[in-house]
Image (cartoon, rainbow, N blue to C red):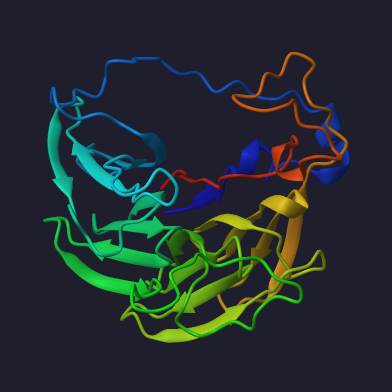
Length: 288
């Protein structure tokens, strides 16, 4: 099977001619009532959505909040069938739940969650049982404070994350985690969950990152990292060797853009809000 990246719809377009290419329209049907929730269950901010081979939909949302208004636990993993009927909640009261970020489903229908608040990545079996845990949140008996950004950045620690964002796998089953808001690197594990290496640090050069926000791999094992703060997607081989960068610059904010909260972003105020700042990367299946 051949797979090709559709990274923000511009990965396959020549860089010199992108500005002249029409943007393809992604057609969709809107169904605001597709998910049938029980009467006593509500969605919070839906930060991640994934689908398994049966068409079941997994929503990792910032719901189930407990604790103080600030720093409340906000992670809940819900499963719906292919018709939107509620099936179950997975991982209720899990120690890793803190602040939901991403959910992914691998080729064997295992369910993976990335929790930015707890610094933990959890692999569930299709039956919903925990089978692997990566990273560790700060213990309640230790300093009870979130990681902060300092200059210069703290050294990386193998096996630990600081606000991770996403996870992907290559054809050999190696695991790649984008780590993330604080560490600005990619962590690699083998298929058994053993630590292999990491690459990257905070910066703007090749192989450096500013908020690696999403990650995906293609059929050849190349790894695509959404380097959001640098407004580019960087491509690496499975060993972390830089291959190329895909970027869109000079695109203005649409005149009719309306932010959900706050002031309308500008180039000076919020680079991650600008056109071309990739928040997600998708690798779509191609022809057999």
